[in-house]
Each structure stands twice: as structure tokens, then as C-alpha cells.
Image (cartoon, rainbow, N blue to C red):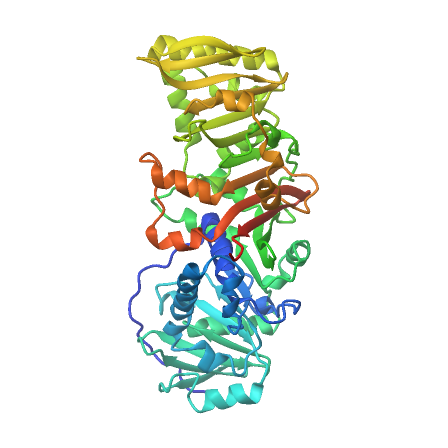
Length: 549
């Protein structure tokens, strides 16, 4: 008998956080670090993906292993002092995700479920927006023991003893109830193979439609090929972010207006996916972004010279490099995704530079910066602070020299900087100082076509005469090790020494005390990126973790 759908009145909630590109990275890295503590017993066992049941409109899906019996493996990395906050963080994560549904993983799910589950967040629909003012969340759990799951459902264990009302949709019985905190919840068992939990009953209808043949995340164009290219290393979690849906939600925020041109360009990107795995040195995250088949553009990023790290001292705190600054600048100007990650307005900056110095940045500098570019933070010789160094391979040295001459003239005539030259060996260095002679910046040339500029602490001598290079540092080599054969960009952070600098400098942002125990378990972060083909880009993220003492 079909019973009427109950009119549940959920408590009001504040709007959920929109998933942006930045949120995806937080989810990938944060979720991966969290699951570092939850590695399942048989790491070679493939994940059972619930994405076959997740509607293609989902904003995000996360499939992860769930065996909690390996929490003792916390001792693999870090120290005894960091084990407790990690474990507490995982417990809080479980409580945050499951308690609103009135569920406890070990008591209600683990006895009958496989060791994986998929979490998905769906965009609002006409059916869901009336009942809930946050986005619908669904859990898709593969069933290992159907009879036990059915018994727990029938005796009220899975619904926490709450009064349920039953309805059917496409022949599937759906039980609706209110969680202990008063929020709506629903559960259904599908084909004796899957259990679906949700905070909005209408979302189960979408899952059932998907099971019956409507498009799923797993059927998205290029999804299988993209995910297949980042397999390996026995991953314990997989993440997918629907970039068109996420960007559309971001664009609807009146506080962060997005131009139609930028939004249209981001709509060409189908998605971002990642797999997370462990090795004996830490966490390895393989990520890929890909374009829709009908995208109006293809990917042609320039390869990065593997030798650029050799120009930096071995104790460099952090560095970021790209194969072409010109391409990076152009992409940033027109790509809303990168601007969401780093809220910097290039047009305003360009206009401010023009009005203050008379220099057109695009015409004077960007034109000859169509090759390798590096930005790095390097400690000073005295160990007091650090300076920023920029390296750019000039495709036209004469144009580059003219650009620096114009910049020297502007800071001298308009800002009263003291501009003078000095020599170090056979190299000439131009120095900027402010009265009474405090150093501000220096610039010059390395080799024949590598221009350098330093800002802040005087570190030019360290760049010109390094005792040993970053490329020779074992921590750098470990963090940036990658199967990607030709990189188009690299990021490296020496976490302990960078944290020390942040804590001891009044000019740098401070890490929240609650985050310190987690950050202190990390030795280094390395990211490499490269084009995978004409429609996708690969990223390798390595988080090197401290070994047990």
C-alpha cells in the first residue's frame, strides 16, 4: 500500500558552504590526511564505487574506505603527541557526518556494510528546496550482508527507534523519519545491493531514477577515462567535483560577481577527480581536471625546464614554478576558477601599476616572459627573515633589459628610491634602497637569459652564489617525485621551516593553534602538474609525513 509522504518540518539551518575549487582542494588534502588514519586492512582491495548510483548533477562525491580497526597505524607517522589530536579529529568528522542522520558507524553500519561508502552532495531542486534550505546529502553504502541490514532496518535500529512513515517510489520502499536532532532523514535498500541514507527524502527518488537508467556520475563524458589515468598505488579514497555545477553556484553569490565570459570558460571544464593513496613516505594524491567533449578550447600548456630549481639555494622554504608566466597571466585574467582560489584582481593591479609608475605591465614585462618562471621564498644569510625571489627566462633579453630600466627610472623618479649598481664576481646587480639606505630590492641576470629580482631581505648574493641548489635537496626530490614525465608547473613547501618563519615574523599570517598539531606531522608538500592530453591535465600532490622517531 502506498502511504502519503509525511510533511516533516525540519529545523532551519544556515546555508551550506558552496563547493568551489578551493573547497575541492581542502576536501582532497584534508580528507586524505584524515583518512591517512583510517587505512583499511587490505590496501590492495579496490574501492566499490557508489558513483554508479549518484545522479550526474551531483556537486561532489567522495568514495572512501571505512575500516576503523587500523587507527593504531597512527604511529606510522608523526609523534605520540600528535596521535591524540588526529584521532579526535577523525572522531569529530564521523560525528559531524553521521550524527545528523541519527547514526553511529560502528553500531549501525559496520556490521552489514562493505568497507567503502560514497558521500554525495546534490544541488537544490524544486522537490528539495521546499523541504530543506541546505543542499541534500546522500550516503550510498554497498551491502555485504543484506539480511542483517534488513533486520536492523525492520527493528528500528537504523532509524534510531524513531517513528517512520513509508512510501514507495518505482517499486522501492522508502522509510522517512526524523533524526534525534529534529532534521528529516530517509533510508532505502536498493536491489539488495545498496543502502541509501539522505537528509532529504526526494533525493532518494533521484538515486532510484539513476539506478533505473538515468545518467550517473560514472557515466559522465570522459569520467572513466579520467579516473583511469589516476589509478595506481592502491587508493583508499576517490573524489569527484562537478565544476560546472559548483561554478554556477559560486556565480549566484552576489558578493562575488563573476563575469559571463569567465563563467562560460569554466563551464567548459567537466570535472576534477582525485585518488588518494599511502606509501612509506606519506600521502600521494593523483588529481586530474578535464574538459567537456564540446569544449571550445584544448589544453596546450608549455613544459617546464627541469633545471630551474638549480638556481635556488638548498634551504629554500617554498617555491612555485610554471612553464610560461605569460600563459599563467592570461589564464588567470580570464579564468574564474583560479581567481576563486586566489582572490586577486589582475585588472586593478595592472591599472594601479600604470597610474603609479607609467608602466604597462602586459606590454613591458609579460611580452618577454613566455617561458619558465619561478617564485620562491629564501631565508637570508643571517637567518633573520626571508626574501622573495623571482626568476624569469627571457625570450627577448633586450626587451627585458629595457623593461627593468623603465622600472628603475620609475621607482627613482616617482618614489625617491636610491638606485645603484654593484658587482659580484663578473655579474652586475642593480639595488634599490630607501633612505637611510635600507635595502628593498635587487635585480640582475643569471646565465644569459635568466632574469632575477629579489624583494625584502637582501638575498641576491645567495641566489648568485649558492653553496648547493634546491634541486639537490633530498626533501625537495622526495616531495616533487612524480611519474609525470614533463611538468608544466611545480610547487614545493618545506613545512617545518616555513611554519617556524611564520611564527617568528610579525608580518606573516599565523596558523591557528588548533591546526598546528596536524601541520607539525608534515615534512613537505610537493605538487607537479602536466598536460595529460588535449583535454585533461594531471596533478600529483605528495605530502611527505614525519617518520616515527
